[in-house]
Amino acid sequence: MKIMRAANHAANKVALKATVPKGKPQKAELRYIAWSDVDVEALNPLLGRHFMVGQNIMLSRVLLKKGCVVPEHSHHNEQISYVVEGAVKFGIDGKEIIVREGEVLLIPPNMPHSAEAFEDSVSLDIFDPPRADWINRTDAYLR
Image (spheres, rainbow, N blue to C red):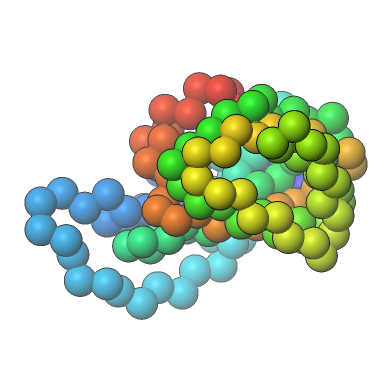
């Protein structure tokens, strides 16, 4: 699991182009991007991510090392988390739910939740609408 600090990488500019439209909404555009062309943003020693943003939806690939804890938080975005590798324990609505490789969790908007990686894990997270705090890098609770 290679984690790099995001830089002025051409793929990042392509991946994040027009993600927060100003003024008149821009015309939707078709984009084809490989994850390997999008730098991983190292949020802390155990957590990295990269993401792609469309007009109404965001797909992120979250890399969690064993023991990584994402503190409890909530957001107005609906979230679907699909664990591609590993196992992640979510604390949500007073319950602990372990989501393993190949399993999916749907988190409704505004529902407080936390996560802990039981082992090195990769999760694909889909958000609607896109997470403005991630795009603007104002997500201090992860850093």
